[in-house]
Image (cartoon, rainbow, N blue to C red; front, side, top):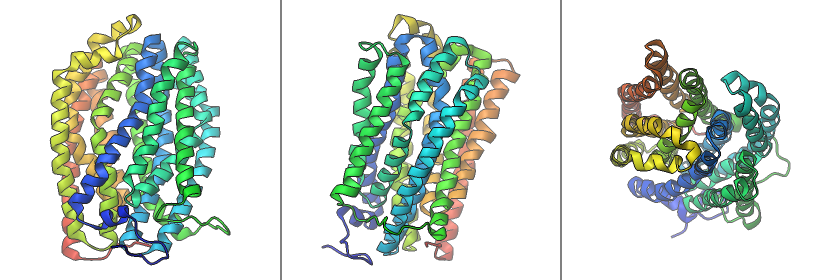
Length: 467
């Protein structure tokens, strides 16, 4: 049966899924997004694997650039998350016209902010890289890699917004295809550009930019040429609506700052690691953190699905549905990450080999294996923070998600790592232990807050502000 939601366009299969059983919706939307997030991580992982063959200086160049690239991702994803959550709430509230207007605002914002980010970062990166501790050859390679990457960063912003729009209306499959295209291209182009064409780190950066352009082109075709989406775009006579900007911003801005805090955490941790372990320590952290990121991929997919499902539920004032979706996602997420933690601990040596296959990277082996033997503890803690933030974003409580993330990154992770690694003089091992201890200490804080919020909404029955 097809239905129409306050507009001329019929509800798609994705919209029916979004508005249906919350457990079924979480599964149907999560699986494609887990696959999609896997390819997005491969986007960056391929750089680390192939660049590692060039030696520690080249690998550390990717590591020094990573916080700034993550910063740009935070901005782009924040716009997408804010717009997507607002669209889902309007779909739940049966407001098709409002969903269209939010989608249009989201795309235009992503283009404007993407262009500004490209210009600013291109100019300021050399000084910031030097401040972080990059010097000599590592600094030269970092500047080459970062400037090429940020010259094309606009093509990161647009697909981030477009993919969130697809996801917000339950179209997880096409979101998966767009992200997969970029990941596959990057994997194919990386070794070709780096080695046969002898472009080194510049080749890795070019492969990344070309991959982002390809994803952007596919999204552009779906949204503006094929036009087979539930939401429609109306650019003629467009003017920014302060109310829509606020609705996107109340989730999008905190989401950006939240992800920027991850970038800030990476910046501070890289600085701490460089002070106790030099370029070798930064290379270990770069490789090891990418491995941890792979293991947390399922939660990224589940969290994005949870934001869409709870957004529609809160938009319809169906708080029981929102609560069911949260606990169902959290239970299954914990079991998945517990299994992945066991794999990372038991097969740390084999996993390490992937990043140390070349003779130039052999010196990373002992420390990288120790990193994995310690940081496996973090994985089962990830669902509590990531899924709680996803639920808060769906509810339109972006500041809650931001505060939860800041507590983990700035108040827990960085101080713990500094205290054990620098203050107590335990070096790199102390940094790794501090990161693991911070993750464990964070669980009761964020989970207790999420439970209290859901209980208060369910008991009060008050309708959240949607428009």
